[in-house]
Length: 198
Image 1 (cartoon, rainbow, N blue to C red):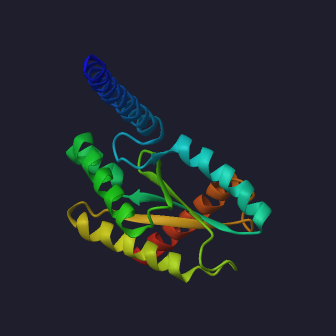
Image 2: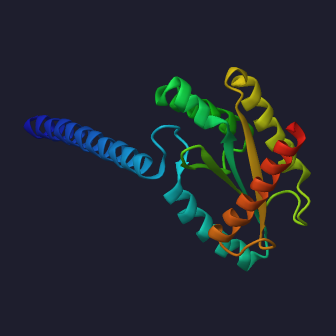
């Protein structure tokens, strides 16, 4: 009888210790996840930050090169964003950036890397796009949706967006080269927009 009571007590103690151990492990995992999120995410928008984009994309590009696959990098910024900060303050500007981040997340796939590079500059890294010959009508369609939504949402501020894209490996071998190429294309589009307005 005494042995049965001892065994029951030991089982209860073991169950309590196991429960406390699980709670400690869960708390540590939550803390690790929070630290990771803070390290790789932009605090204002919740998008990935510049550091994570470069870390992820450059590793991915090495893998894609070995496999003979392609990727697309899109670089874009907001047109007339400075006006919002100057006229309505940085708090309103931050709100606009948060809304733009939501638009981007809603248009691109969960596994596309959408990042805020800083200020009103964003980049999207898309692995293995549908078209691999430089003709990416699907991507252009998505980007025109993004621009349309931004213009509709911020009509009172007259905000729009300009973008440029670059294809790996055609337009560059690493993320720096690809962003540079996409940036040049973006400025070409900005010039075209200005010409069309005049």
